[in-house]
Length: 170
Image (cartoon, rainbow, N blue to C red; front, side, top):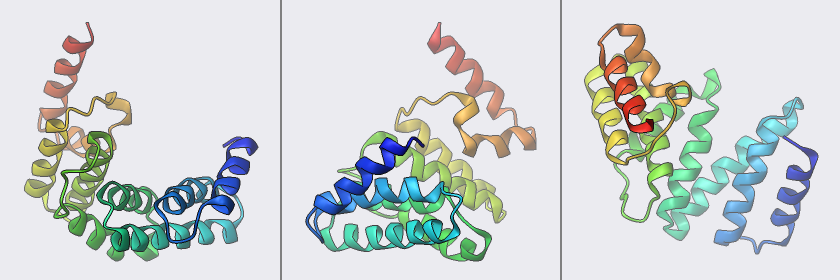
């Protein structure tokens, strides 16, 4: 990330009112920047901000923020936190979705499907991935990490999805 990104994220964090929706989103943006740092301490601070963000989103009953917070935690899942992230992915699939953007919902459901697939729950994973398709989230196959396991298992679903996407783009 560019230094300007971090500077603006730090400014947003410093000016946002604590315990507010603005602070929650500012912290998620700041955490995204810090999570890519080579400094281990910054990455730990990013993780703490992400967890605080999820707690604040729950407290504020902000569905979009809950899903965005969950996504930020699921995106970077260090091995020592695997069990916690798996539980979060499972929990997030049961949250109310009415006030959540299709993009955010699709990303969380896609990652939740990947987590399910990784623990041998292929049927549940495929169910979640079908839900992603219903969000009408259009992502290039190279940026759809939840579809890679199906490609590797040879189910043929990947080929059908790819062909459908290509037809739509023509």
